[in-house]
Every structure is written in C-alpha cells, then in structure tokens.
Length: 438
Image (cartoon, rainbow, N blue to C red):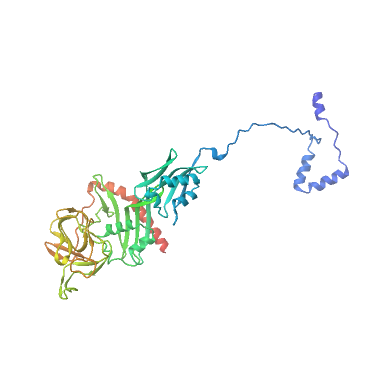
C-alpha cells in the first residue's frame, strides 16, 4: 500500500479484556444486539467517530396562489328532496350567495325551474369559489332545461337529451294480480301493459291467471343524463300460465316489418284480440237467455260485458275500417268496425270516442277507438262487446281465432341469429327464478 493508504487504515489494535468479553457474550444472547455485536467486531472496521457535516441549502419555491384563484370548475349533483326550493337546492350545491340571488332573478319567469320533482337529479357546474357556471335539470320527456351563465347573466333554454339504451331483465311470480307482481318486481307499468298486449291472443288475463304463474321479461329502457327517462320496448318475454310456457321475441325484418313471434317464427298475434280491454272483468257473458237489469225481461245477450272504470281505453280487436261511430239506441255511444272478410266488431256504452275517429277511417289492431262509459241502456260503466261473423253474433271466448302471418322463410336465418341471445337471457332468468323459489 502507499503511504496515504497506510495512514487511512492504521488504527490502534483492538484487545478483548475479560470484562469486555463478558459484555459481548451477554449482548450476543439477544438476536438484535447479537447482530450489532457481530457487526461491531467485523475485521478491518474502524470504530473511530466519523465527522458529521451539516449542509444547508436554500431552495427557491414557486409562489403558491390561493386555491380559489384557479379558474377550475367541478360538476356536482344533488337529488331533489320533498319541499326543496331552487334556493335550498343551490345552497346544497355550494353556490355562493351572489349567484343564488342572480339565478333567482334571471330565471324568475321560467316555469320549469320552479317545478321541481322530488327524486330527480340536478347537475351543476361550479368553480371552487362557488360561482355557478351551468345547471342542467332533466324532469323527463325528451328535453332538458339548461341554465347557463353568459356575460354575467343566467339564460334558460331547452335542449334535447342524449338518450342511452340500457337492457333490463326482470322476473316475478303472480300472487294476486299481474300488476301487483310486476310492480313488486320493479317492472314499469308501460312494460306490463305491453306484456298483456303481446300475449292477449293466447292468454285471457281476466280469467286465466292463477296464483303461482311466473313471468320473465327483457326490455330496453332509455336513460337521459344517467337518469331513467322512460321504458322502451319489450324485447323478449316468457309467461308460464297454469304450467304452460308462452314465449315471445320481438323481431324486425329487413323490409321494416316488425312484431312478436314465438321461437319457431309463428306470429304471436291472432287476427283478433281476445279482449278489447287491457284489464277488466267479465260482468255478463254471452248467453241465449239473461234477465235484463233495465228491461226486467229475459232476453238473449249476444255479446260480452266487461266491467271497468269510466275512461278505460277500448282497443280495436283487429285491423279494420270504422263503419259507424255515434249514438245508437240502447248501445249509447257505439263504434262498429268492419274487418277483412266476414267479420265485424261492436263496442257499446262508450263515454267518449277516440279523438278524430270518424266513419271510413282505417284503424290498426290495438289502436284506441273509445273509452269505457255507461251511455245508453247501462246500469254502470262497462263495455258491451260483440263479435260478428256474417252479421251473426258469436262468442269470441269460444271460437278459434285465425293467426297472423309468420316470419317469411327468407328471413328465418336472420330471425334465429337475432333471437338466440334473447332466448339465452330468458333461460338464465328462468333458472335464477326457479333457484330462488327453491
């Protein structure tokens, strides 16, 4: 080694006295201290004190501005509560007092701003200092209210909502009524009505329902600004009525023809609906002899009476043409439809006709033609419905109804491709429902 190296490494020889040896043995009995002792006696290790130098350097830090000075904006949202005013809502959104006052003044004439609906959500864009830049309120429909701050003043405008489609899947069991079961399963009323309409040719929802019947339904739902806007169309459904499954899938072919079909492509609709009302009960059936409550005599009842509240919608049983719409003796307000071929239908005791309905007008199956009432010879609100073949009344609950057209052969490959994932969803829902019941 060089002289310099010798000077750096040279030190006083380390000697172990008996006292130091006893301390070393004692400390080595503890693992941590044992390690320290072992490192302390490592060869060629200097035990001298090392010089410690304090180094202090000055660093130039950027000037920190108050957070409120940044022109940053944030999106906040609040759900409208019962009893809320626009002022209380803005306060919860963190809007400063100056903008609350300005907002109330600038939007004073806007009816939509002051008609807050509990449960709806308001979205607001604000700065860190609580300045309100923009507020969006979607109460439903296809438009949303937008309140934007422009040159220091708030301007209100209606803008179209960008809708998103979400697929919903629900299932339920009938305990008392279909509407009670669908409501319990969270199915919107509009979807429940579609379910009845889709299967009305196969199931009489007035008389055929049984406790324990089950349903599964797949439908699309429209969302605006992340909030449910309205239910869309039923895409697929299964209804097990008295142990018999009925399945329907919506399919639209390339030529634009759309409808509900069974898994084999057969049209779910018959040429005629079994009943022209969505929900009601039969108060008087088809018979050759019935005691008339007003005339007080026995006479044939060549139709079916459906008891329902005044104003209940009455639907056309099939495609046809209005041959009569007006007052007709004991029928009161009545609509008569002429259908293709030899069939016609009669709808009596109506409280009102559908808006614009007139003789010669064409109507489609399921289209509203009038509303339940008690006009003419009626003791209470109900619909008197007749089904005629070649001018002779027949019992619509007992005769076979012809089917509508099935999926055309050329469209069947596309039909099977379209229905396969929907059938898989129905199968999944059925298995889940059965597992839950077990």
